Amino acid sequence: MVGYDNLEIRPLCRAFGAEIIGVDLSRPVDDDLYARIYAAFLDRQLLLFRDQDLPPASQVALGQRFGEVQVHVMNQYHADGFPELYFLSNLDDNGEPSGKHPDKGTLAWHTDGSWRRVTGQATFLYSVEVPKEGGETHFCDMYAAYEALSDVMKQRLEGMRAVHNLDFSRSRRHAEDPMTDAQKRAAPPIDHPVVRTHPETGRKCIFLGDHAETIAGLDYEEGRGLVEEVNTLAVRPEFTYCHQWRPRDLVIWDNRCLMHRATSYDSARERRVMRRCTILGEIPG
Ligand code: OGA
Ligand code: MN
Image (tube, rainbow, N blue to C red; front, side):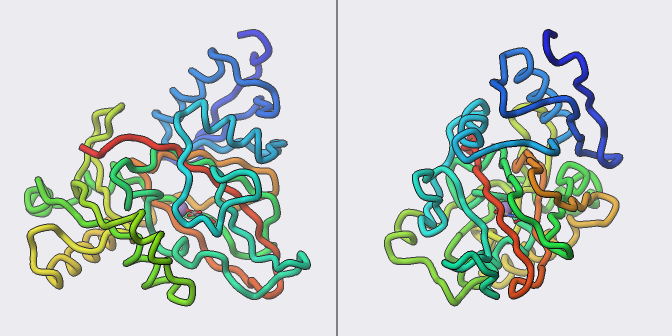
């Protein structure tokens, strides 16, 4: 392949994740390179590209190679001129740390856009400024989490559907800035299978996370209990990769088979500026 003879795919941990070395994403991604990146994405579920020069327009353009980019209903996070980008910054209007975490919902295990009918396929998260301590992102393998369930639990979950609701998770985690009525109307609760089959790999995985409120057809509290139980069972250290950010990292992951969460940092002293875009995938089946 012309220009990409040095491309190297280096696993990040045993089960999933790979660093892609030898690619400069500020240059156009031709069809051959895209095919190699997409194959690695399906195979490894998460890709890391270090030291990338990726201004907002390039990030959106790269995302569009994967598919339609979601315009997030929480429009206060949109970046000027780029409704496709979601800004996570703790800086105030003077560019100083404000002491406020921009979105505490990200600190709980979740999968992006699970509260939509058409859920998130890939997320592209790019680091502009990162704290010296904390502010990592953890990822957990939901294929492995499903395979590790007992046969009894697998049977119990078969055919079950969870109700995902952004208003539920937002009120629970970031109650000081609730959704507006218009935002709530644009993101009503919807249901998805608890066990989904990845449309491209054909493998089964758990699909829950923090936006999942309860189970359709069960008593509310019983459903809440089951969602919490399976969310807790799913996450194990041996299924988890912790990403320690450097500035100018791009991480692309598959929301259909990974959960993720951010870790906290001192938002009054440290600086953390990230931008993400999420690609629309499909209706889970
Ligand atoms: C998000 C998210 C993780 C992070 O924006 O959806 O989960 O580390 N971010 O900021
Ligand atoms: Mn997220």
